[in-house]
Amino acid sequence: MPQFENLKLDRQLCFALYSATNSITRMYRGLLDEYDLTYPQYLVLVVLWEKDGIAIKEVMKRLNLDSGTLSPIIKRLQIAGLVEKVRTDKDERIVRLLLTDKARKLQPMIADVQNQVACQTELSSEEFFELLDRLNQLAASLNNTEAKQSVAS
Image (cartoon, rainbow, N blue to C red; front, top):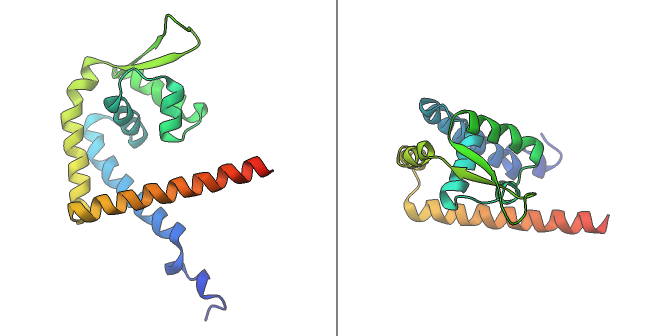
C-alpha cells in the first residue's frame, strides 16, 4: 500500500500525458511512413503550411525546439525536396523556410492523415477542441512558470 496517494501511477498527470503522446505519435508514425515523413518533419510542415516563408527562428519558437534539434529535421526535409532555405535581401542573417511545390501537393494527403488520427481518438469534435484548448492552456501556464523560474535564478 503506497504511503502517498499522489504517488500512484494513475494519479500522475505527467504519465497520462506521456502515454497519450506516445500513442498519438505512434499513430502518426504509422500513417506518415507512407509519405516518408517523420512526426517532427510533419510538425515543421504544419507550421509552414500555416505560414510559408517564416524565419527558422520562428519555426523554433512555434515548435519549442532548439536549433540543434531543428537543423537535422530541416536538412532531411531539404533532401526530400519539401523545403528550401533562403536568406532575405534585407538581412542576410535571417534564414527563411519555403515550401516547395512537392510539399504543397502533399498537404491534402497529410490533412487526411491528421483527420484519421483525430478520428482514432474517438472524441467528438467538441471534446477534441475542448481538450486541445485545455492542453494549450496547460502548456502556456507551465511555460510561464518555467520562464519566471529561470528569471528568478
